[in-house]
Image (cartoon, rainbow, N blue to C red; front, side, top):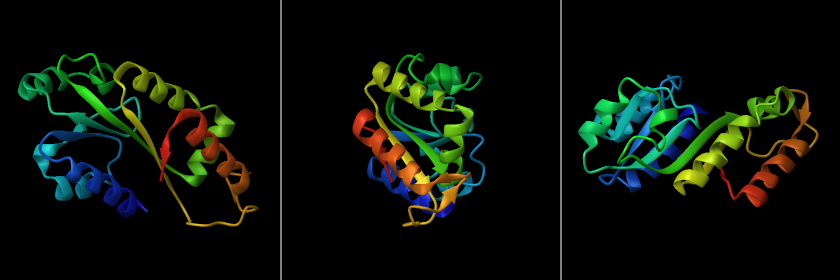
Amino acid sequence: MAATATAIVAKTATAIAGRHYLIADARERAIAPFLTTALGAERLLANRQVNTGDYLVCARPRAIVSVAAAASTDTVARTDSDVPGLRVRACIERKTLADFAASFKDGRHANLQKMRDLRARTGCQLYYIVEGPAFPSPGRRFARIPYASILAAITHMMVRDSIMVV
């Protein structure tokens, strides 16, 4: 599953290479080696904690060196849009079906609200990568939530919030 998400993120980032770079959450350790191989170290800044989403695709500012230096001691919560010159183009959240279902129960809808707030501030596009079996039966449960309910929530996010879901 991690390789699939990596391939999607890598293809997206490679398509916009040169002008953009990827900030990957430092907690996404399983994917970091794949991203470094696919993108190269110059287009991947993976040593930061991203508080909104798991990955941020950013336009390369003119003074990338000064922005990277300013951001190196801070978290991306501040660097999302507060560091001068850093322009977020896309925010990507990666979840398994079980984790997505569990977020219903434990109230982690705040993550979705943080993503919508980031889009309001920056105009960035929002993406969810939902990992799991391709076509589970509607009655199959993930974290005790039927897949039909998960699919309804995903559809709701796509229609109401204009979030692209893969």
